[in-house]
Image: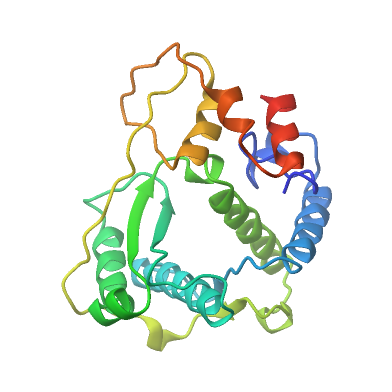
Length: 243
């Protein structure tokens, strides 16, 4: 993401055009290049596209199935074992417990990640996090990929012509509505650094944390200390230079 000019922690797909230095055409080019580079790594991902309306149940199925496909592909390729490497389903956005989407998603997750999957394949812990797409690079990458695919569909590129092994068309049979809604989890909170929103986002990622709804800022700033522990020199240099 850094090498392709996507500027994680600072921008996401919409804001890099609205408030950033690139045009929609440049954004598409950068994301396309990013996907090419991503294909050379062991990172797995999946996206579900739907062109005939997306109600809450279809949206829930798209979220759940795409995560399941990404996890099972990683296990099939031997990238991680599953049993000893639990996964966090990090859902961007604040949870709305009064929305029918919340219940639809939790029921869908309960069916797709049933006790057999949780015990024998991979434990999965669903978490809602406000601004996840600007806090965790994984969510930021997903936001850019979704924006890229959406731009293709807006330009009337048929779904069938979006040629990528990680892109699937929504199958109505994937939609589930039975079962008891799965429980949700929360990340441990991190007190934000006073007047350092971007550094706080980076620290949340490095420490696996989230920020509380009504945080009390602190003057303690372990940013440099934590960044210097990153093994990837390109990422470390980007973070120290930019933030």
